[in-house]
Structure formats: structure tokens, C-alpha cells
Amino acid sequence: MPARLKIVGLGAAIEDTQILQRVDLSLQPGEVHAIMGPNGSGKSTLAQVLMGHPSYTVTGGSIVFDGEEIGHVATHLRARKGMFLAFQYPYEIEGLPLKDLLRTAYNARYANTDKQIGIKAFHDLIQQKLTLLGLDPSFVERGVNAGFSGGEKKQAEVLQLAVLQPKLAILDEIDSGLDVDALRRVCNALVTVKKENPDMAILLITHYNRILDYIVPDRVHIMKKGCITQSGDSSLAKVIEHEGYSE
Image 1 (cartoon, one colour):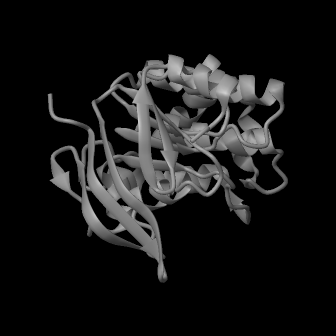
Image 2 (cartoon, helix red, strand yellow):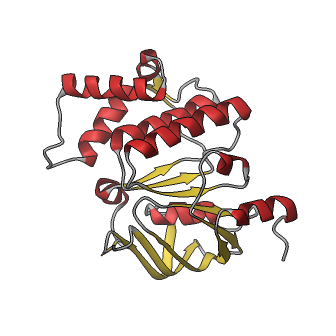
């Protein structure tokens, strides 16, 4: 089976600062990989580079998604191919109802396919996803993340996952800023979405082991100074929890 995502020798810089040195990583469909590491190690940069953020320059290596080299593909086209990035700090957009953003994103994701749907069908889809995730219908009537708590912002990201059904979800510290109860709600929603879309691969970027109690990864990778320095199964996260990121 071809890899869903294959990164070989990836280097990246912002302005004149080299951040990613040489990253090698491969995810199969349905796999969950966690990337852990200290602050400033390049984890969030990797997420941004994978989605084609224009502030970063790829200085070497390749990014292959579903067998296609995408290193020079625009961000919106990567999203249309089935890549999704959940933000560590989701943007707030006053005056734009979440339901309108979701419908626009859905129809862009499935442009020129038979999955295009009208307003009534999309309303029914949204209601199904809200029920699936245990969210009140009023949730999507609010402005995008406007006045949302930290937990609600992350729940909105998971709702987008449920609606868009990506092939690869990159979750950039989706657990940051959440208390125990909010973390449980967000993780339970993620588990529900994963069960509904079992072939979705997940690249989970986190500082903390606690989210991995809910979403058990197939592989754990440690990133330091722009490189993946160690990889292992889920037990590696427990080692890090007890010993830290020692040299």
C-alpha cells in the first residue's frame, strides 16, 4: 500500500533562518503518528510547511502525498486533495457564521466531484455531524471562533474534520490550553471522527503525553533542532513523560 504521506530529507527556512534540517517521515492510511519535542524544535514549522505556508521556503527534500510530489502545490490545492491542518491558535472571524465557512470549505474540498451538495443537503449533513459530536445546533450559528472558549475553538476544528473528511489530518497542539474536561471532550470527538473515517491518517503534534491517553499513536517521533532524532511505538511517549527530552 502506498504511503499517505512520505517526507524525505525535508529542509525548510523562514527568511534566513533554517528551521527544519532533514526530516524523514512516512504515514500509511489510517495510521496515527505523534510528534513530540521541546519548544522551538520545529514541530509547528513542519505542520505549516506540509500545508504550504508561503512564509516558509523548502530548502531540500520532498513531500509526497498519495504518490504525488506536492512541494510546490498551493495550499488550497493541498486542502482539496485531502490535507487538513487544525490550528494551535484558531483564528476568530466576527460576522461569519461557522456554518457558512463549513459549507464554503466543503464545496471547495469537493469541487468538480459528485459530492457537491445544495443548501438543504448541507444543512442535513451539518446536523448529523453536530449530533455525532454532541454539539448544540446553535454552535454553527455563531461567528467563527468569535467569543469561543479554548475548548470550543478546538471543537470547531474537530467539526471541520468531521465535515471535510480529509485523508490526512495534521493536528498542531490541539490539546494546548485545554483543561482536563475540555481535553476529554475534544479527544472523544476526535476518536468519534476517526471511527467514522478510519482511513484518515493523523499527524498529531503535542508537547504532552496526556492526549495520547485518549488517542493511542502507532508511532511516536521526537523532534529536536529541526530533526527527528528518535522514533518508537506509543511507549516512547511514556519514557519522555518520565525522563524528559534529555540529550
